[in-house]
Length: 193
Image (cartoon, rainbow, N blue to C red; front, side, top):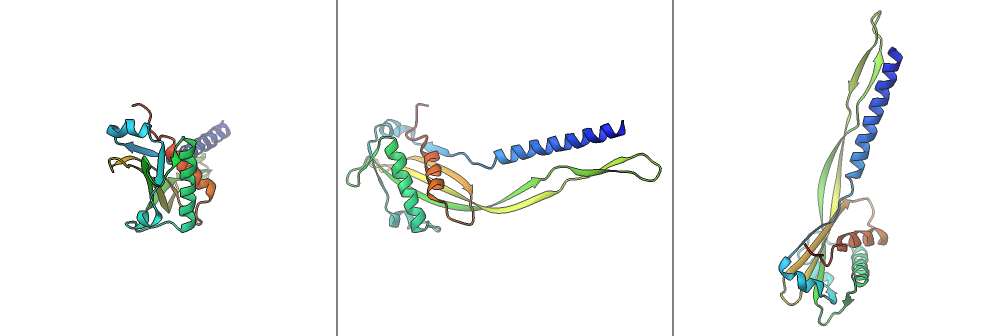
């Protein structure tokens, strides 16, 4: 009977640990966030052309600018995503201008590694249970890519989308950049509220 309770406790702890791990890892990816000016909604739906704000103009007020390589990757990803939505590039008289920039933020993540413990015997008495809960603290940098759509006619910010991810040791490759830009632009132009 004592052995069955030990096995049950062990299975219970492993199940709880697996469930907590699943919840933790599903929370690691950050969905894109979007906001837009509802007064410009009809204009946004009628956009046919765009231009991308030049690098020099975008990086003027930014304390952290992208390398030229990553900047080109973002520009290419924007072109591809917008052209897939039926917009065409037009440097002379675009319906909207696209600007993008990045921010970084230091993050701290605490993770409970689950309940740990063991069965023990003390002298002539029956067994017991002891436990402890180790905690892991992880400090990392999170990067956010923000895309702005500026209405050319009014000069106002019409739409903004952003996505964040944990930064690694190397710059994002073309596929990662394309995925991030596509994720942001899935809601552009906005659908009916």
